[in-house]
Length: 203
Ligand SMILES: N[C@@H](CCC(=O)N[C@@H](CS)C(=O)NCC(=O)O)C(=O)O
Image (cartoon, rainbow, N blue to C red; front, side, top):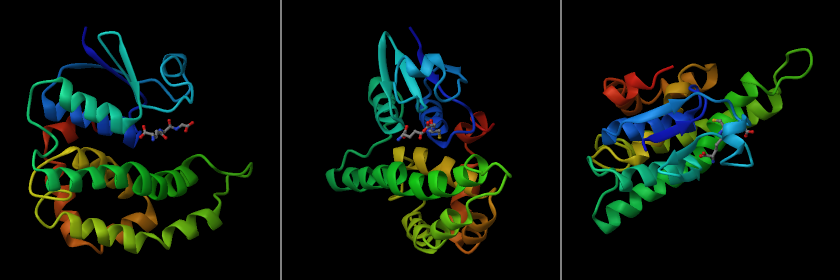
């Protein structure tokens, strides 16, 4: 049975798993379900996307899914073999799926898109509080890509997680402004957007 990735297309976490599958060269079925849809809840009772099925095996959480795809299939290794390099990339995968996802997606972009009051106003308090953290978040990432990729000189799972976050961040005012101050990061995203995995998972 083929790999199936389930989740809606604009989700950064869903895109991270799809980028991973493309980078591995794995054929997969993509099912564009929304959070809390029946096929999502069947795998992850919390209703969050992505979820995955493969040969009767089910999995949730993008970090676990990307790691599974990397190890279950042939294709280029997306985690370094060297112990310290591997640990560095693990740090970045964790940072992407916790701090960066929390601040840039949940506490900022999701606030703009979904968490509006009945008059359609966004919660400026939450947004402004988060925006104050952007200089540090973007500067750290700008430094991390100085050797070409997040945390090193090879494409890894850290890139699979960070690329979708940066791609969305460009479309919102304060994150786009901060992104524009970091030339290494701009160059990085420009290079990443040339990859087949980026183009095939856009939209
Ligand atoms: N830690 C989870 C986060 C998944 C997540 O929050 N996904 C969002 C879409 S980007 C979602 O399903 N939100 C709906 C909800 O939280 O109810 C992962 O990395 O997979």
